[in-house]
Image (tube, rainbow, N blue to C red; front, side, top):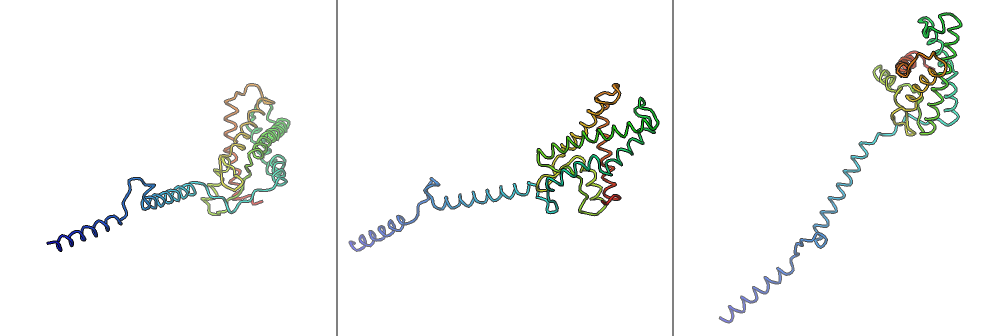
Length: 228
């Protein structure tokens, strides 16, 4: 009988000792090494997921674009007002306006044509000066670049979106507000400065919108005809 009792006590002692040595799961994550490990892994996974989402949402820098230096940018500014392409555009528009006798106060003859050419150059100076100033201030580039993708669809798309976009320093596109503001400033200021007084602000805004559309046409010429 004593032997059985002694064996029973030994069994209970061994069982209690094994139970005492087992790791106890704590309700407090700070005291539970397993919980801390799981939490750390979860946090790392969330951080990697958030970083991946942010990277995929951000536009990738363009590998084909290098921002021109200040001298090149200024040369382009002068060329945008007095270069052959710009002067050709002013002469073409003056010819169309003379044929339509618009505005009629300037007449349909050579003197009216000369006045319209001078008006186009003045408007171009205003537009490009505003655009150049904003580009330099905000470190943007509103210059037109032909599409690197030479497929027809890509070239047409580039011609369509370029009048309303600009390039950041890394080559990614953003809203081209320097060009847009420049176009409307040129239209409004020139109309108020030397055009007949009968033109309203609404007329000026319509004229500016037509100019943006004309830019698309000129861009298509640069994509498919004018290679310089």
